Length: 265
Picture 1 (spheres, rainbow, N blue to C red):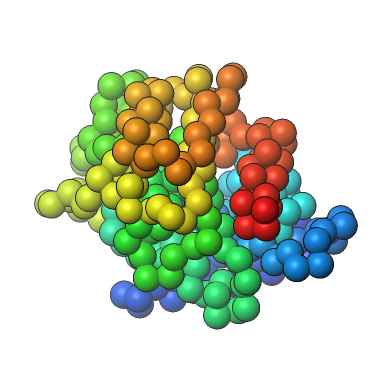
Picture 2 (cartoon, rainbow, N blue to C red):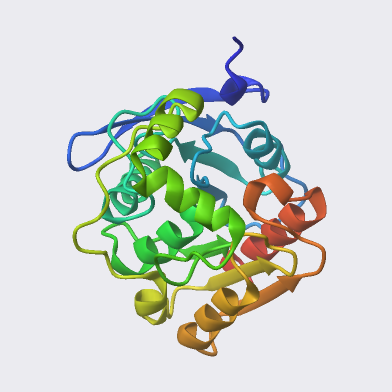
């Protein structure tokens, strides 16, 4: 089977080791040759976090990386328990925050001048928590289709997700059909994105949500916007569904322009 991670021209595999020793497999997609930019502009590096059950080889994720590379280098790893990475998934808790933190640290170690984290769905909540609590803070953060609080069961898709996470038959389906390796359910929930998003300031923050998100209603977005405070930028995108599966070229390009203007105003 072809490795879709490497289907973009110039893409190369990368391995990152989290602080707890978990090996994370990912990809680095070089930026396309940029157009005219101010002489002092810093090149951007996007460190992207995928959604639950997805990976950096998921076709919509690969497509999104192809659009985003017009604005800078794109780096991403499979969260633990997903794709080619080791370990077991905690579905967006502290271990995944550590995964994203390690990916940002690796980008810094490779010389990234300006890091923008971009998380989607599960990755969106992880990006918020990492920007507030991580050791390797980004220069800007974008959270798309993020949950604000845990144990959301008020939509049919999220009830299916909790069946995968909490019911033995669901966990077997996750392993066999999705290749997902899961940690046991949380004994103590980690701090929710809503509890920490205010601590991201003064780092620039962009919150993005679709008005047709079938997983997380707009109440999650509105709660995050209120908690983030007046320095956050917030977009409700008409017709947009959920995360990388619904992302369009115009939306990704709009995010890229926001990041470019924010890093080099």
